[in-house]
Amino acid sequence: MIVNILYDDRQDKMEITDENINAIEKTVIACLETEGMDGTFEVSVSFVTNEEIKELNKLYRNVDSETDVLSFPLDDDEGEIIMLGDIVLSTEKIIEQAEEFGHSLEREMLYLVAHSTLHLIGYDHMDDEEKLEMRQREKEVMKELQLFK
Image 1 (tube, rainbow, N blue to C red):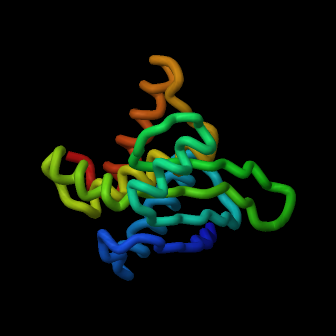
Image 2: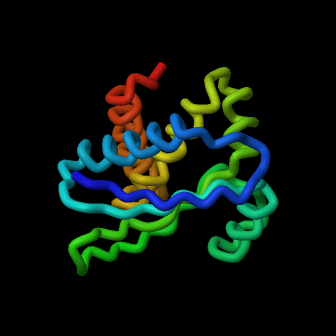
């Protein structure tokens, strides 16, 4: 499996390290492997401020509030590279939620990447059944990465 990740860091609240980038790649791969997917994939990951994610949330979801992560599936598997879509992470929310839940910034960031990647490949949580299935997949991925408490 090959996963190409395009990064765009448009914030100054949290340093994004090479270790973070490597961990994000492992998380995306773990999500795809959990689903039995194989091939060459592309995902973009953007790090933004609360202000920017609020604007995107309002524009694309008509929700006028900050959120931790947004997923924009492309569902483009016409070529050799399967373009899964875009993940947009609020680093301010990562910091806030890591503190709130009492775990590391990396663990919070990777959970959000796993959550968003599952959205990119078709999972959702609009009803209780979907939510339960998606949470189970998230737990599997976090256990695989040895990040689940």
